[in-house]
Image (tube, rainbow, N blue to C red; front, side, top):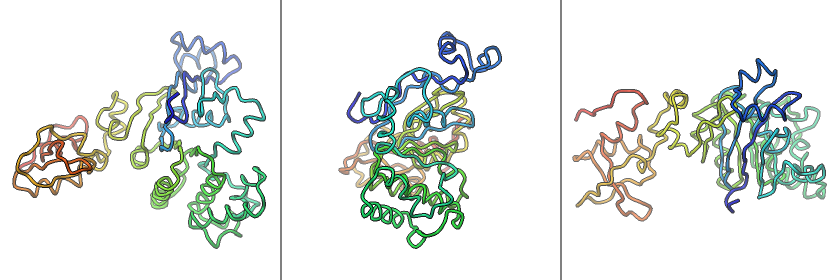
Length: 349
């Protein structure tokens, strides 16, 4: 297991039913999800999932309802046990942890933020945030300091004595996030954490998460059904369908190289100009006699007005040191921004 891999899922199967162990072999021999349900009255949750999650990265697992994404994330803290396969965390297979080891793992190594907040309604904000710290049996002074620090960090200073029902949905989810972060676990699981929120509040929470991740460098596994959300926050994206892994890669890889028609449909209405960087679509030609240039990581929609405003309709692309590594033209940008299946766009000059 590579040093930069925090979690490695290998050959993971989950089948729901009384004879799940026997059904695994049928699935491996080719029995599909529908046949398994109709003929054997078992439900296929996950089929042969292989996934590496890098340390300190925000890894998004996405798919439509019933794809298996929530089933997968619940394996990572053993809320669900696999029918077959391995789940390695820091090189250790958590499937074989005994009760005491599993309790310690949940207390110190991993935390979770739930879709419907999961707060204790009879406890105030402070007590909800401090819940995991009390479970860890930390000194009271440390519990108070850490809980108040995280309450303040998520923007809820002054609300520590309120009950969850006195807060808006967005504020309640901030409490859930503060509770998860207060334990200082290396791994943060977020299961549809923002999907119950209004669009503007959801965007605010995404921004807060990205800001926190810049500071904390946690290993985050984020579940969503929203591709826009996945593309905005994810360092890496894995897409599930019917319990199977269809495609995984960086946001730009997913958008530029969809694995099949299902993924093409998923990304059809995405604003590719916001996602794709110049380095993915630039030409290899190095322009001579042209000063300056556009950075390789600039988004296409930011680069387009700059390229169209220059006489040559083409500009150099440079690396972090300002060294030219290629060039970008108006036509290249227009082609890359076109939706899959659309006719190629020609820019009229």
